[in-house]
Amino acid sequence: MRIISKQLAAYFAVLLFVLLLNFWLPRLLPGGPVEFIAGGEDSAIFMSEAHKEALLAYYRLDDSIWQQFMTYVKGLFALDFGMSFSFKAPVTEVIAARLPWTLLIVGLSTLLSIVIGLTIGLVSAWKHPGRVDRGSFVGMLTISAVPEFLLGMLMLLLFSVEWNWFPLGGAETPFLRPEHLWDRIADIARHAFLPVMTLTIANLASLYLLMRNEASRVRGEPYIEFALAKGISESRVLFHHAARNAALPLFTIIVMRIGGLVAGSVLAETVFAYPGIGRLLQEAIHARDYPLLHGLFLLMTIAVLCLNALADGLYPYLDPRIRQGRKRGAA
Image (cartoon, rainbow, N blue to C red; front, side, top):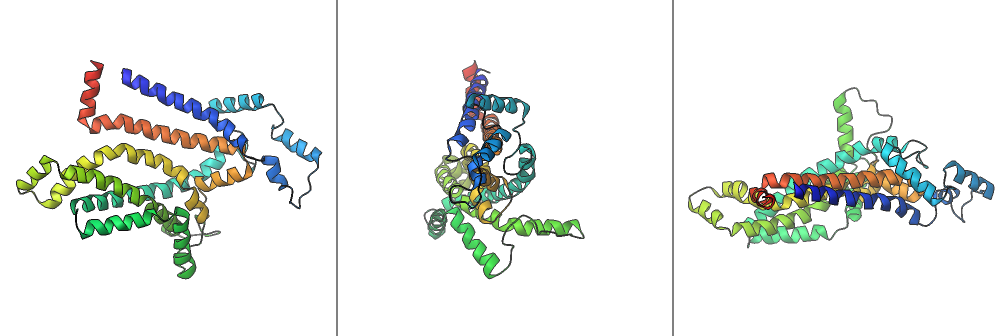
């Protein structure tokens, strides 16, 4: 119980620190919402000082920093971040409209990258040393050297521009009126395919290397040699013995990476003009949309903390040694 209390206190301290940072970081960016609306010094839009002051008053940016901070804190307790400067709509509605699209591509890419990366890493470690291991290792290192945005642009040029297999961008075909539900699902799948593949390939190498290193350690354990000596098939030993014990230490890392993928989808969503949270964050930063940035940063923070807490809570049930150690510590 004492360990759980310490963990909760640590999570609360991190959340409090991030909430304070959440307010100040957007305001440290050069410029502001009014400067973005005016277009800067080289803009063709003429805006008088009176007009700028009126905009500051309208968005309540003429209040003191302390007053703005108190408004921000009150909004946190009420889950009301105000109106988005750029979308002229409540922040919660703007985020709610974009969140499902990010969950779609991040969820699919996470599932695919975990299954493919861990499987290839497991087989590579089992075949070490050999051609399969060397080929997989070199291939994954090559993939990891390609930036995510470059990978997305290459896929866009090849599959959308050159071969015209998939749409250039967006999440749905504009003004499409499908006769059946499956037609709409197929249209959404065609738009999501390239972003999902980009995120999947971009995250394969790290998961592969983690699994390969851990599986190489497990392969030398006595119980693996004993299972093979008993005549158990190599495939059964690989997937029922080595895979389970090798994947267990990676559980926390994988769960933490899932939380980071929400923010990590910025590049992929920008390249494919996909209307998700990542692209929304990029638009909010560009527009210096403080209320929208507050809401997005809080969403990402809570997602990461909740997933970390989930990993901390489930890991003792997956590994009996941790559970027994906590019981001895509590005693």
